[in-house]
Length: 211
Length: 211
DNA sequence: TATATATCGATAAAAAAATAGCGATATTGA
DNA sequence: TCAATATCGCTATTTTTTTATCGATATATA
Image 1: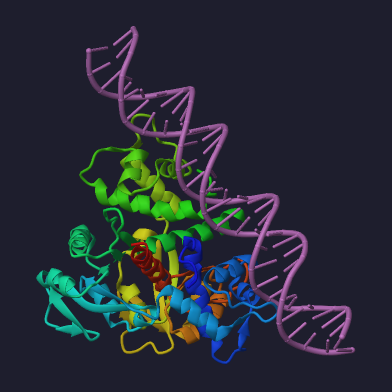
Image 2 (image 1 turned 180 degrees about the vertical axis):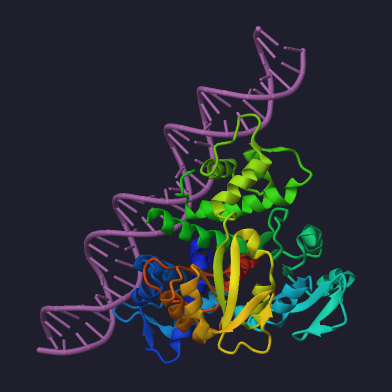
């Protein structure tokens, strides 16, 4: 088993490599080189080589990596082979969109159920049941769930977050546009579109100010 | 005008500060210190101070920053005051969800219209017209649009991307889960959920392997 | 008025990441 | 069989980012 200790930057690039390999892999050649990946993705050669070296040792001089092996190794490292169970809180527009997206399993994420204050008339979306909030703790006790997805309005996000942590959740994927206060050891991954937009906007500003 | 040259990391943190200030600001005190922000967001004091210093000079010893002023300065720097026009390609589930999200304007993004191969029966979603693809270039010629949002299936993403660039788009917000090939000077911001999931999953793995 | 305190800003040090260069190795083709 | 070449992996250097330390300043209080 390769070392678990990769830098955050590397970790963010690994899914990109995997994505690239899968997308271009079907009819392509059997082998792929770190150089080839770096050129296709506009990255530095050495960055790619170092990233790959940290999760695989199957690279061979002159040949490169066997594409399928590399894909498998990446998936294994990223945990796509053993799905993590998750629950979602907030069955609004966004919540339902996520529930009905069937691509998460491919990334090792399995949404068991959704919770909402007002479960509404629909009993399930995307094959996942929508349950009232008071059933949340009971389910977490019965099943070992570690990931919580928050898609409630900002005002309720912190309360939901606290509830999730009390129920044993260790990592939170936060789609609400507020900052969450959590104790040590709990990871909050903010899906913040504002960050992406800031990068876009800044790029344009620079483009126009330098011209 | 403060310098435009901030690091990418700083740029990613600025929207977080802004978000925090807005969210906690309504009934709060008039002044806010860099120290206060750093504690609330679990960041290093100096990081926050340095980030703020790069976009504002209104911080005063002992007092801190005037909250409203700081918010305004952040918004100005991030370009939230002058909305960038954008067009969206791919009026599927995700595309429509984005169209009907009315929060983008707050971030300085104004979606003018959506395009799709098959515009469907609905003429508009969220007040934005859905037009056939062949109208795209004409609109871009008439109006100066710089941001393109791609929400088409992966197979079509590259073709759409090429079309957008031909039409004069300078920055692309890519929701398709494929890597896009673009010429120098064009920014592609990938909204890749797999990256977020990788960070979550790795956090859990580390948690369980060290125990 | 004078002193204590909280906070900013600047400089310096440490850590991390990106980059560059070199040798080793396996494949290809003469 | 042997040379040429493409590619990996290692080490060193540079750059960037983060962290630590110190002095300066404005407010509050005695």
